[in-house]
Length: 144
Image (cartoon, rainbow, N blue to C red; front, side):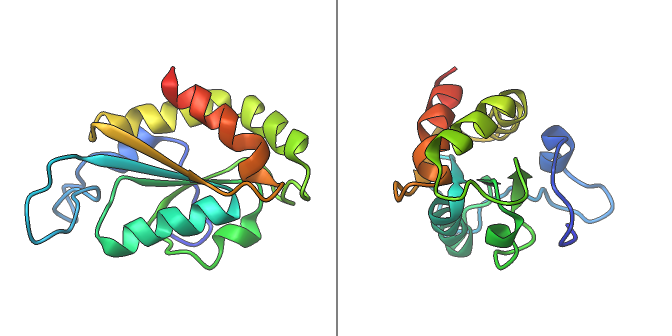
């Protein structure tokens, strides 16, 4: 994925690419694992936590954010869903509204990744921005 690529078609993102070989979402661990986790981070803190899971070998990872600047320093191979451009500005209600506006895309992304996993872990911070406002709504979307 290029730096400017945001995934809207998660089904094609998670399927094997016949040109490049193995599926993008095969975890990279030395031993077999009991669970196939889907890790989703919302907001800057949640995205950093989710990216840490990626660094340890998990591959069913999704970053959801309202600010492109929060996503820029994170590994470009991780699926990302941008639901704004300027961030929530420490306004939880703004973040909540953006998550609700992107509910269909978030549900589709989580659903597509969940088909390749069996547990969802949602990572978020509660410092007053995107995680605080959008996190609880993302939990509700994931439960659906």
